[in-house]
Image (cartoon, rainbow, N blue to C red; front, side, top):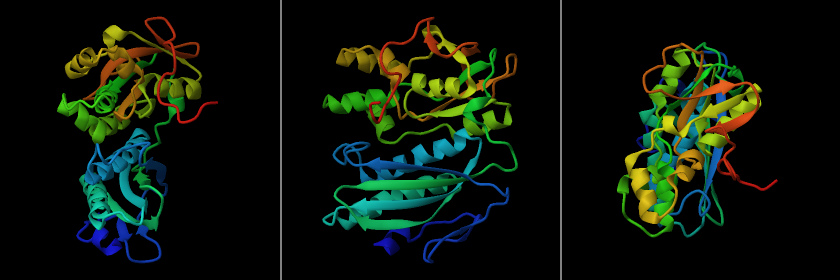
Length: 303
Protein backbone atom coordinates (compact mmCIF):
# COMPACT_ATOMS: atom_id res chain seq x y z
CA UNK A 1 0.00 0.00 0.00
CA UNK A 2 2.81 2.43 0.88
CA UNK A 3 4.62 1.61 -2.35
CA UNK A 4 1.46 2.36 -4.33
CA UNK A 5 0.97 5.61 -2.43
CA UNK A 6 4.45 6.98 -3.12
CA UNK A 7 5.03 5.54 -6.60
CA UNK A 8 5.89 8.21 -9.16
CA UNK A 9 6.04 11.07 -6.69
CA UNK A 10 8.63 13.74 -7.51
CA UNK A 11 10.98 15.13 -4.87
CA UNK A 12 12.60 18.58 -4.86
CA UNK A 13 16.35 19.11 -4.50
CA UNK A 14 15.88 19.81 -0.79
CA UNK A 15 14.94 16.15 -0.23
CA UNK A 16 18.16 14.20 0.24
CA UNK A 17 16.51 10.96 1.39
CA UNK A 18 12.82 10.39 0.74
CA UNK A 19 10.42 7.55 1.56
CA UNK A 20 11.92 4.09 2.01
CA UNK A 21 14.33 4.47 4.92
CA UNK A 22 13.68 4.67 8.66
CA UNK A 23 13.61 8.45 8.38
CA UNK A 24 13.83 11.14 5.73
CA UNK A 25 16.69 13.59 5.27
CA UNK A 26 15.76 17.12 4.23
CA UNK A 27 18.16 19.94 3.44
CA UNK A 28 17.84 23.02 5.69
CA UNK A 29 20.12 25.63 4.08
CA UNK A 30 18.79 28.43 6.29
CA UNK A 31 19.90 26.61 9.45
CA UNK A 32 16.33 26.91 10.75
CA UNK A 33 13.10 25.15 9.84
CA UNK A 34 9.50 26.28 10.15
CA UNK A 35 7.31 23.39 11.31
CA UNK A 36 3.55 23.03 11.64
CA UNK A 37 1.18 20.10 12.05
CA UNK A 38 -2.55 19.63 11.67
CA UNK A 39 -5.10 16.81 11.45
CA UNK A 40 -8.23 16.02 9.47
CA UNK A 41 -10.75 13.62 10.98
CA UNK A 42 -13.53 12.03 8.97
CA UNK A 43 -16.92 13.35 10.03
CA UNK A 44 -15.32 16.34 11.73
CA UNK A 45 -13.28 18.00 8.99
CA UNK A 46 -14.49 16.22 5.87
CA UNK A 47 -17.07 13.72 4.63
CA UNK A 48 -16.35 11.23 1.90
CA UNK A 49 -19.92 11.51 0.65
CA UNK A 50 -19.20 15.20 -0.01
CA UNK A 51 -15.56 15.15 -1.05
CA UNK A 52 -13.52 12.79 -3.19
CA UNK A 53 -10.48 11.13 -1.53
CA UNK A 54 -8.25 13.24 -3.80
CA UNK A 55 -10.00 16.40 -2.57
CA UNK A 56 -9.35 15.35 1.02
CA UNK A 57 -5.65 14.89 0.28
CA UNK A 58 -5.37 18.30 -1.34
CA UNK A 59 -7.20 19.93 1.56
CA UNK A 60 -4.79 18.33 4.03
CA UNK A 61 -1.85 19.94 2.28
CA UNK A 62 -3.50 23.34 1.85
CA UNK A 63 -4.37 23.84 5.50
CA UNK A 64 -0.82 22.97 6.56
CA UNK A 65 1.03 24.81 3.81
CA UNK A 66 -0.97 27.96 4.57
CA UNK A 67 0.40 27.96 8.12
CA UNK A 68 3.94 27.75 6.78
CA UNK A 69 3.29 30.53 4.26
CA UNK A 70 1.79 32.75 6.97
CA UNK A 71 5.18 32.73 8.71
CA UNK A 72 6.79 34.03 5.52
CA UNK A 73 8.31 30.65 4.65
CA UNK A 74 8.25 28.38 1.61
CA UNK A 75 6.96 24.83 2.20
CA UNK A 76 9.67 22.28 1.39
CA UNK A 77 8.49 18.93 2.77
CA UNK A 78 5.48 17.13 4.20
CA UNK A 79 5.23 14.12 6.49
CA UNK A 80 1.87 12.39 6.26
CA UNK A 81 0.37 9.82 8.64
CA UNK A 82 -2.97 8.19 7.94
CA UNK A 83 -5.28 6.05 10.00
CA UNK A 84 -7.74 4.02 7.90
CA UNK A 85 -10.47 1.51 8.79
CA UNK A 86 -9.41 -2.03 7.80
CA UNK A 87 -12.20 -2.27 5.20
CA UNK A 88 -11.09 0.90 3.39
CA UNK A 89 -10.77 0.20 -0.35
CA UNK A 90 -7.16 0.43 -1.46
CA UNK A 91 -8.14 2.95 -4.12
CA UNK A 92 -9.35 5.39 -1.45
CA UNK A 93 -5.93 5.39 0.21
CA UNK A 94 -4.17 5.74 -3.13
CA UNK A 95 -6.39 8.67 -4.16
CA UNK A 96 -5.87 10.50 -0.84
CA UNK A 97 -2.13 10.05 -1.32
CA UNK A 98 -2.38 11.25 -4.91
CA UNK A 99 -4.11 14.45 -3.82
CA UNK A 100 -1.46 15.04 -1.16
CA UNK A 101 1.38 14.40 -3.58
CA UNK A 102 -0.03 16.60 -6.33
CA UNK A 103 -0.64 19.52 -3.98
CA UNK A 104 2.84 19.20 -2.47
CA UNK A 105 4.55 19.09 -5.86
CA UNK A 106 2.64 22.16 -7.04
CA UNK A 107 4.30 23.99 -4.13
CA UNK A 108 7.73 22.69 -5.06
CA UNK A 109 7.75 20.47 -1.97
CA UNK A 110 7.96 16.74 -1.44
CA UNK A 111 6.14 14.14 0.63
CA UNK A 112 9.16 12.63 2.36
CA UNK A 113 7.60 10.06 4.69
CA UNK A 114 4.89 9.23 7.19
CA UNK A 115 2.96 6.30 8.61
CA UNK A 116 -0.05 4.13 7.81
CA UNK A 117 -2.13 2.42 10.51
CA UNK A 118 -5.58 0.92 11.02
CA UNK A 119 -8.10 3.15 12.77
CA UNK A 120 -11.81 3.37 13.46
CA UNK A 121 -12.27 6.19 10.94
CA UNK A 122 -10.16 8.03 8.39
CA UNK A 123 -7.66 10.33 10.10
CA UNK A 124 -4.94 12.24 8.26
CA UNK A 125 -2.13 14.00 10.14
CA UNK A 126 0.25 16.22 8.19
CA UNK A 127 3.46 17.82 9.40
CA UNK A 128 4.73 20.58 7.12
CA UNK A 129 8.30 21.88 7.00
CA UNK A 130 9.28 25.24 5.54
CA UNK A 131 12.31 27.37 4.72
CA UNK A 132 12.61 31.08 5.57
CA UNK A 133 15.41 31.68 3.08
CA UNK A 134 17.42 33.67 5.59
CA UNK A 135 14.60 36.07 6.45
CA UNK A 136 12.97 36.69 9.83
CA UNK A 137 9.66 34.91 10.49
CA UNK A 138 6.51 37.01 10.28
CA UNK A 139 4.75 36.47 13.59
CA UNK A 140 1.38 37.42 15.01
CA UNK A 141 3.04 39.72 17.54
CA UNK A 142 4.38 42.40 15.17
CA UNK A 143 1.31 44.60 14.66
CA UNK A 144 1.56 48.22 15.85
CA UNK A 145 -1.12 50.91 16.31
CA UNK A 146 -1.54 52.82 13.07
CA UNK A 147 -0.72 49.84 10.87
CA UNK A 148 -2.93 49.01 7.93
CA UNK A 149 -4.79 45.68 8.10
CA UNK A 150 -4.93 43.96 4.72
CA UNK A 151 -6.45 40.82 3.25
CA UNK A 152 -5.34 38.41 0.53
CA UNK A 153 -7.94 35.95 -0.71
CA UNK A 154 -11.70 35.71 -0.36
CA UNK A 155 -13.93 35.47 2.68
CA UNK A 156 -16.96 33.29 3.36
CA UNK A 157 -16.67 30.96 0.37
CA UNK A 158 -15.82 27.77 2.29
CA UNK A 159 -18.46 28.51 4.94
CA UNK A 160 -21.02 29.09 2.20
CA UNK A 161 -20.06 25.80 0.56
CA UNK A 162 -20.45 23.95 3.84
CA UNK A 163 -23.87 25.49 4.46
CA UNK A 164 -24.98 24.46 0.98
CA UNK A 165 -23.79 20.88 1.52
CA UNK A 166 -25.58 20.72 4.87
CA UNK A 167 -28.72 21.99 3.14
CA UNK A 168 -28.43 19.26 0.50
CA UNK A 169 -27.99 21.83 -2.26
CA UNK A 170 -25.92 21.29 -5.39
CA UNK A 171 -26.26 24.92 -6.45
CA UNK A 172 -23.24 27.25 -6.59
CA UNK A 173 -20.68 24.57 -7.53
CA UNK A 174 -17.75 26.96 -7.16
CA UNK A 175 -18.64 27.48 -3.50
CA UNK A 176 -18.93 23.73 -2.96
CA UNK A 177 -15.49 23.34 -4.53
CA UNK A 178 -14.09 26.09 -2.28
CA UNK A 179 -15.13 24.11 0.78
CA UNK A 180 -13.83 20.79 -0.53
CA UNK A 181 -10.42 22.11 -1.59
CA UNK A 182 -9.23 25.50 -0.33
CA UNK A 183 -6.80 27.41 -2.55
CA UNK A 184 -4.60 29.65 -0.38
CA UNK A 185 -3.06 32.63 -2.22
CA UNK A 186 0.52 31.52 -1.55
CA UNK A 187 2.03 34.10 -3.92
CA UNK A 188 0.41 36.90 -1.91
CA UNK A 189 1.89 35.54 1.32
CA UNK A 190 5.35 35.52 -0.25
CA UNK A 191 4.77 39.06 -1.52
CA UNK A 192 3.78 40.18 1.97
CA UNK A 193 6.94 38.65 3.43
CA UNK A 194 9.03 40.54 0.90
CA UNK A 195 6.92 43.69 1.19
CA UNK A 196 7.39 44.55 4.85
CA UNK A 197 4.44 42.87 6.57
CA UNK A 198 4.75 43.27 10.33
CA UNK A 199 2.37 40.43 11.23
CA UNK A 200 0.48 37.80 9.26
CA UNK A 201 -1.91 34.94 9.90
CA UNK A 202 -3.66 32.20 7.93
CA UNK A 203 -7.44 32.67 8.05
CA UNK A 204 -8.45 29.17 9.07
CA UNK A 205 -10.97 29.72 11.88
CA UNK A 206 -12.65 32.92 10.66
CA UNK A 207 -11.52 36.49 10.00
CA UNK A 208 -12.55 37.88 13.39
CA UNK A 209 -11.14 34.95 15.33
CA UNK A 210 -7.80 35.01 13.55
CA UNK A 211 -7.43 38.79 13.68
CA UNK A 212 -8.17 38.39 17.37
CA UNK A 213 -5.03 36.25 17.65
CA UNK A 214 -3.01 39.12 16.19
CA UNK A 215 -4.63 41.52 18.67
CA UNK A 216 -3.82 39.27 21.61
CA UNK A 217 -0.25 38.54 20.54
CA UNK A 218 0.54 42.15 19.64
CA UNK A 219 -1.35 43.85 22.48
CA UNK A 220 -3.43 45.97 20.07
CA UNK A 221 -6.95 46.41 18.78
CA UNK A 222 -8.20 46.21 15.20
CA UNK A 223 -10.99 48.26 13.64
CA UNK A 224 -12.88 46.95 10.60
CA UNK A 225 -15.73 48.41 8.56
CA UNK A 226 -18.02 46.11 6.59
CA UNK A 227 -18.04 48.69 3.79
CA UNK A 228 -14.35 47.89 3.22
CA UNK A 229 -14.88 44.13 2.92
CA UNK A 230 -15.57 42.78 -0.55
CA UNK A 231 -18.33 40.17 -0.40
CA UNK A 232 -18.16 37.67 -3.28
CA UNK A 233 -21.32 37.88 -5.35
CA UNK A 234 -21.96 34.14 -5.19
CA UNK A 235 -21.61 34.17 -1.39
CA UNK A 236 -24.26 36.88 -1.15
CA UNK A 237 -26.50 35.00 -3.61
CA UNK A 238 -26.10 31.69 -1.75
CA UNK A 239 -26.98 33.34 1.55
CA UNK A 240 -30.13 34.80 0.02
CA UNK A 241 -31.05 31.39 -1.42
CA UNK A 242 -30.70 29.70 1.97
CA UNK A 243 -32.18 32.60 3.91
CA UNK A 244 -29.24 33.54 6.13
CA UNK A 245 -27.13 36.66 6.69
CA UNK A 246 -23.99 36.42 4.57
CA UNK A 247 -21.99 38.46 7.10
CA UNK A 248 -21.82 35.44 9.40
CA UNK A 249 -19.95 33.54 6.69
CA UNK A 250 -17.73 36.48 5.73
CA UNK A 251 -16.67 37.49 9.24
CA UNK A 252 -16.64 34.18 11.10
CA UNK A 253 -16.50 31.45 8.45
CA UNK A 254 -13.31 29.40 8.41
CA UNK A 255 -11.24 27.28 6.03
CA UNK A 256 -10.88 29.80 3.22
CA UNK A 257 -7.17 29.90 4.09
CA UNK A 258 -6.60 33.40 2.82
CA UNK A 259 -4.20 35.60 4.73
CA UNK A 260 -4.53 38.70 6.90
CA UNK A 261 -1.52 40.89 7.57
CA UNK A 262 -0.58 44.28 8.94
CA UNK A 263 1.68 46.77 7.16
CA UNK A 264 3.16 50.12 8.22
CA UNK A 265 0.88 53.06 7.48
CA UNK A 266 1.64 54.63 4.12
CA UNK A 267 3.43 51.58 2.75
CA UNK A 268 2.39 50.36 -0.69
CA UNK A 269 0.53 47.09 -0.34
CA UNK A 270 1.99 44.16 -2.30
CA UNK A 271 0.13 42.68 -5.23
CA UNK A 272 -2.88 40.62 -4.16
CA UNK A 273 -3.57 42.58 -0.96
CA UNK A 274 -6.51 44.87 -0.13
CA UNK A 275 -6.81 47.23 2.82
CA UNK A 276 -9.66 46.24 5.16
CA UNK A 277 -8.95 47.99 8.47
CA UNK A 278 -6.63 49.68 10.93
CA UNK A 279 -4.63 48.59 13.95
CA UNK A 280 -5.58 50.67 17.00
CA UNK A 281 -4.71 51.08 20.64
CA UNK A 282 -6.81 48.88 22.91
CA UNK A 283 -7.73 45.25 22.45
CA UNK A 284 -9.94 42.99 20.38
CA UNK A 285 -11.57 43.38 16.98
CA UNK A 286 -14.34 45.89 16.38
CA UNK A 287 -16.65 45.81 13.35
CA UNK A 288 -18.27 49.16 12.55
CA UNK A 289 -17.23 50.27 16.03
CA UNK A 290 -18.89 47.36 17.83
CA UNK A 291 -17.88 43.92 19.09
CA UNK A 292 -19.40 41.29 16.82
CA UNK A 293 -21.96 39.20 18.75
CA UNK A 294 -21.23 35.54 19.34
CA UNK A 295 -18.09 33.58 18.55
CA UNK A 296 -15.73 35.16 16.05
CA UNK A 297 -15.07 31.85 14.34
CA UNK A 298 -14.53 28.12 14.72
CA UNK A 299 -13.90 26.77 18.22
CA UNK A 300 -12.89 23.14 18.70
CA UNK A 301 -13.69 23.05 22.42
CA UNK A 302 -15.76 25.01 24.90
CA UNK A 303 -13.83 26.62 27.75
